[in-house]
Structures are given as structure tokens and as C-alpha cells.
Image 1 (tube, protein in one colour):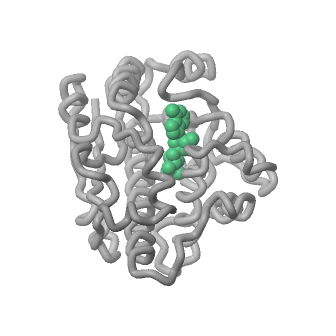
Image 2: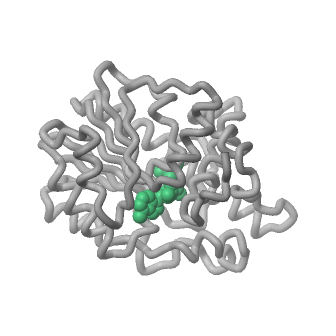
Length: 275
Ligand SMILES: C[S@@+](CC[C@H](N)C(=O)[O-])C[C@H]1O[C@@H](n2cnc3c(N)ncnc32)[C@H](O)[C@@H]1O
């Protein structure tokens, strides 16, 4: 398996896997991702570790890891809650190296679709096959670009637009332009039967997602150079106009409720919507 086929945006999925691998080793872990370390070991140079010898790098490591760990736990709960509320179809947009199909305790009958670019899904398949991983639901992968035509491939793969769906766009919106993000929401709306749910992180568009001190580090700049901002603070209003009831969750409060140090310089939160 070759990490060289991962595009720069595809490599961001490996950094997420590194944080999940580290969390999974903790006695007080908020989730256990048994495959995260296998992804990192398959391409360690694509998920570079931040240096440990500077205050700035340690702050950035804390903030990024807090964000990824908090959001992973939050979205785990969101997806299983959505199933409790009647969703039996799950769509992970920009699934990256998310292994929820393999690690969550899904109820019977769940059909889960993972959409991402071919480079990421190919790398993921190789690593999971080598690990002998078996999904705990009916899992279908869909190779598509979410800023272009992804609806047809999803429908062709068997997605059923007549049943309630739990949508998750974790770690995606910041990589889309405002126009692409608006198109994505419109398409999700067209595919969402009554009872559907949607969740993703929200970050203010008008503020830099990373503070200046973090952007002075090359590891941060590498990611930040890929960001296009998404819809930022416009997302809740746009979704409400499209018939979604929106709930916002503050990251710091959530992290505190998980018993972790909530201090962060990255102003992120979460949006959940129901139809
Ligand atoms: C930071 S990772 C998050 C992955 C995953 N959701 C998670 O949290 O583990 C970002 C993912 O977005 C995907 N991505 C970014 N832009 C995309 C696009 N236009 N179409 C499809 N996937 C995209 C990348 O390939 C990558 O897997």
C-alpha cells in the first residue's frame, strides 16, 4: 500500500487517525478506535507529529487533539442517537479514515455509506483488509468528489432517499468553498426524508480557525493552506431556511462535560439539525 497516492487533503485524514490512535491508548479514553494506529503505521510520514520542544507546538497539539477527541465522541453519540430515533441509513460525507462502521454497536438493519475521494478510500481499504476488519453494519463505499457530482454515485450505490438518514460531515466543511458548501447542503436537503438528521463542526468564517501563534508553525500552515472556510457562521441560518431545526453545541462546554481540559484557542463548536 502506498501513502504516495494520498493527496494533501487526503493526508489530513491521517492526522485525525493519529489523534484517535493516541486517545485509544488512554485508560480513560472517550472511544476506542482499534484501527487508527494501523493507518498511522502504514504511512507515518504522512501524519507528522508536532515537535514537543516548544510551548506553541504543545499548545497546538493540545488544541487539535482536544478538538478531534471531543468531536469523535460527540459524533459517535450523535450517530447512535439518530439510530435510536429511527434512522437506519447513515451517510458519512468525507468519511476519511473513520472506522465507525467497524467499531460502533449498530442496531440491526443499519446501512452505512462512506463518501470520500478514491485515494483515501483505497488506502483505507488496503489497511483494513490487512487488519482483517469486518464491518458491524452493511457498509458501502462511494468514491466521489463532494464539491462535484456525488449524488448520482451515491444513489447508484443503493442510497434510499425515501428513508430517514443520519448525515455526518466531520472535518469536511472547512475544505469547501462557501458555494460548494451551499450546494452540498442543498443536495443533502433533496436527499433527506422526514426524520433525517445532520451534524458537522462549525467554525466562525470571519475569524481565522487557527490563531496567529499557531499559524507560525509549518505543520499548521500545511493544513491551513487547504482551508476554504465553508459557510462559517452562515450555516445555521441557511439550514433553517431549508426546513432543518438547528441545535448548536459549544466545544468547551462539551469537553468539560467529558472530564477533559477544555481550554482551547480554536473556536469550534458543533451543529446538529433535524428534519
Ligand atoms: C480531516 S479529514 C476528516 C475525515 C473523517 N471525517 C474523520 O473525521 O476522520 C478530511 C477528509 O475530507 C475529505 N475531503 C475533503 N474535500 C473533499 C471533497 N471535495 N470530496 C471528497 N472528500 C473530501 C478528505 O479526503 C479527507 O478524508
